[in-house]
Length: 108
Image 1: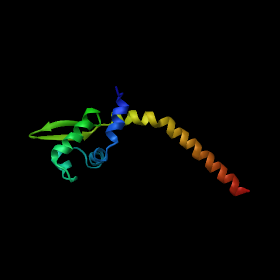
Image 2 (image 1 turned 30 degrees about the vertical axis):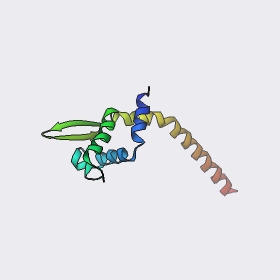
Image 3 (image 1 turned 180 degrees about the vertical axis):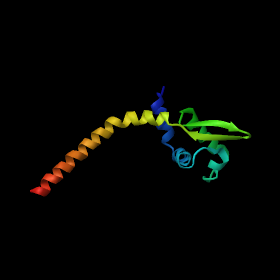
Image 4 (image 1 turned 120 degrees about the horizontal axis):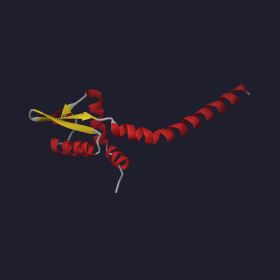
């Protein structure tokens, strides 16, 4: 069975889902049809992608009148950031070492 971070990464592996998240990040909460208008696919397909994102907690859904609005949720992103932190430190240390080596070579 996949743990929650595996499910989030699996959801993020799809380009359409990443674009949906970008739209919600940049433009705020939106109804399904407004999101679907950005894609060359039918609304039911977008709804399926939104369901995957909702199931892993990346978006939330609320009903307003006859429309379902989707909003970006931050908790899973925090989980990913915490998972990535040791790798970020690793690369920052490597880059700092490389910068130091280059600086020493330029002074020679």
